[in-house]
Structure formats: structure tokens, C-alpha cells
Length: 257
Image 1 (tube, one colour):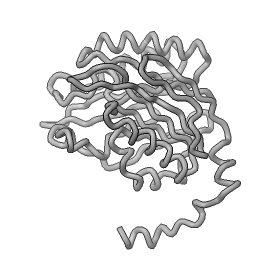
Image 2: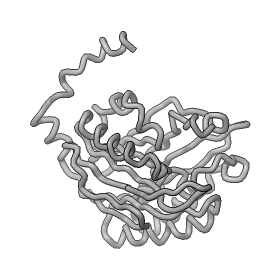
Image 3: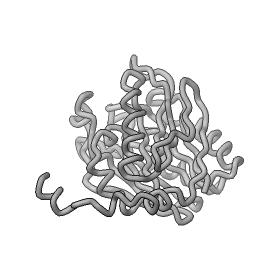
């Protein structure tokens, strides 16, 4: 299958404007026969902790994306914020081409370094879905630093998706961690980051696709755009050639942790 990773400049807290830009990207990906397109974390607001301004109670963004998915006949993955009492939830949702929800993930690790944990409730479940026979697992940004949750779904996923707002100042970690997660779990890693300026932070993108051998297939830096990734049987083939995962000692790890 063909996946599209969309890297664009998110105008801070300008939800409607960003959604209109997203429609253009979705149309472009569909024209290239992509079956799914992924957007960054908090896709249409940027990384905002102003839940009263960006949060939703009734999934308005889902309805907008549902319309785009149906119009262009493509599955869409996107981030948004849900109000949850006095806090928010940092969501990443995937819709199929008919607008049905394939998966909805809540960020397990709010970024406490910036105070995100004061404004957002943590999720407590992983999310995996299947599209065209390919199994995908969803994660958000800071989750990338916690290998335990990636390992927990490794047996159920061919591709792991990390949607992010990851600033340029820490982009070397982004690159190394995506590579590491691919190698240790012998699966595809798709990292989708934003580009541009938000609240004095510069984001250089660096969205990239890493194959199960840890090799970067494509990467986009310092500009908007879409990269495409053809995904086949690479995960299964890699695990068959070098079956390291079969030597895991899960019961022991549970005791140690």
C-alpha cells in the first residue's frame, strides 16, 4: 500500500485555516493514489495547551475530516484535542475512506517538560488498526522516548506511526529514536512532524519513513510537502530472516519492571 506523510506549516490555533490547507494536501495525496495520509500531532492547531480555545466536545474536527476522506476516497490520520472536564486529551484519530473510525489514540505520555501534563490527561491504552492487510500502531511525539509501549504492540503491528510537534532543537534525538524503534521492533516507523514557527519554536520537519532494517527510505526537512512510502511485506520478511523477537523473555521483563 502507499502511505503519505504530510508535513506542513501549522498556523497556531487557526483551526479552520489549517483544515482548509489540509484538504489541499489530502487531494494531492489521493491524486498520487495514496491509500492513507498522516498529519502531525494537533494537526490543525499546533502544539497548544489552551484547551479552552482548541478543545472540542463533539468531535467537530472528526466531522470535517470525515467529509474530506469520503470526498477524496482516502484514509486520514490526524491529531486533535478533546475537552475532558477541566483538562484536555491529546488525540490521534484515523478514519477510513468511508469516514469510519479505524482507531482513536490518546497520548500516553504528556510532555511534562513543557507542562503538558497539567493541561492534558494521559491515555492508558495503545491503538492498532488494519488497513489493506497492513497493521498500524499509533503514537504521539514524546511517546517516542518510551520504548516499552512500542515493544508492547510489536507483535501486532507492521508499521508504527508517530505524529509529532518536535522542535528542531531536539531533532537529532527524533532521528535516532525513530531508527532505534524500527531496528529493535523490526518494523516500519513513520514519523510525521510539523514545519515552521510556533510560539518562538522552530520546527524543521524531518518527517521520515524508516524501514524495518532501520534504513531511512525518505525524509523531508525545512519545507512543506508530502513524502510517500510503499509498504509491503518488509516487516514480516525482516522478522523471518532474523527472528530476534522470538527470544524475548516477557515474563522476566514484567518482574524486572
